[in-house]
Length: 215
Image (tube, rainbow, N blue to C red; front, side, top):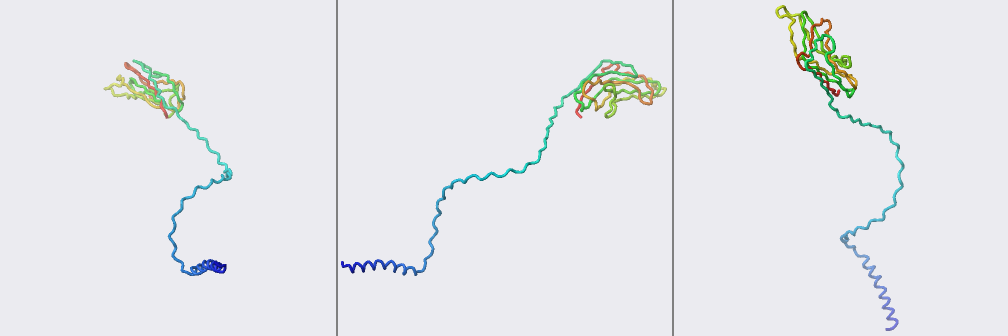
């Protein structure tokens, strides 16, 4: 092949690509193709460095101290004193006593006397049976007492009739301090009335029951 022909062929090869670009560059653009599938998730990145610590908060207000109070469980505390046939014929004075140990000052005492009582007289009379605590009558709330009043009666019935009946004197007393307490039953007169012929505990059992109760 001669050198001239070889050069012509080289020029044709170089010119053809340029001609194709110009030709197809003027064509109408076709529709977009369908979207491709989503790619796989990427791997987690490297953790960041810790941030700078925040500032201290404001100081809180001073709290209140609450002390829990656990009360001790209440334990029964009672006592009974009993006598067989006291047969006390006194009209004024102490009939019987019973010593009791009171455990708490903020409690109350329940007392009961049960026994035979009698009063007789020719004219109107009145007798009073009552409790004392360490020699003093109950002041909180009021004395613990029981009375028997006898009218002069009529000539037909005769007021000197002699009847003995089982009776009781009972009540609650507050304000008695803890410790040994002398609980006593007394007989005395009623206000503004003459005394008669009293009898306590004739021919039967008499008893005093003392019980400490929570208020």
